[in-house]
Length: 234
Image (cartoon, rainbow, N blue to C red; front, top):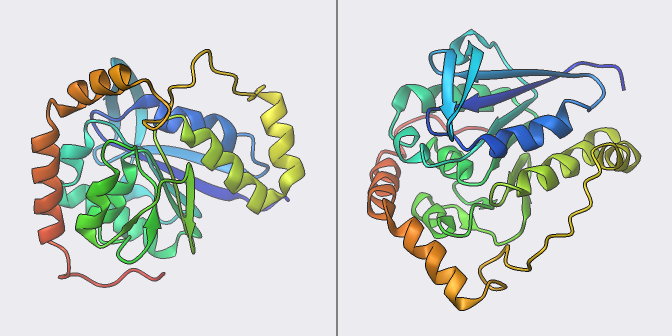
């Protein structure tokens, strides 16, 4: 495969860096990949204490083949940022694949892209997808037509390998997996709420409860704004 594949990661303040650096690491090895990391204003974006600089402006990107929206606590604000959502929707029009990791699917939903579609999300916020008419999916990687969404944070690697396999074939995907030695063997089996000990789940839920009301209110407000624009092709 020699054709260039234009990949855009659309960032926002408060993004979770592994949500995009995980799949970025995989997709950067896809033959023909041309990756642009961008934000609404360009320049710099803070992500969990790290600063990502020299970002492109979203409005300067004409089109892309793969659009990826990562998640993070900044999604609360991103869902209400009309200018950011407009750029996401514009790029989604012609993209071959519209994708997300973690709560990035809530941004896609707020842009009016996921109505009636199955989508994955971080387990703590997955149910909010239903506010937008999307179908919450517990899968680590969910596929509905050209929409491919990953679950929480680390699922971005699985999502990216899934996409590479479809575009370039399983052999290429497996070669990339081997090259980055992606062979998960976690020290604890607590990576999903149904597997975690009750006291661990309760502890994490208490952490996420801080700001949850604000996140739900933002999702409700964003969902209420839908239905006034053009419908993005499926």
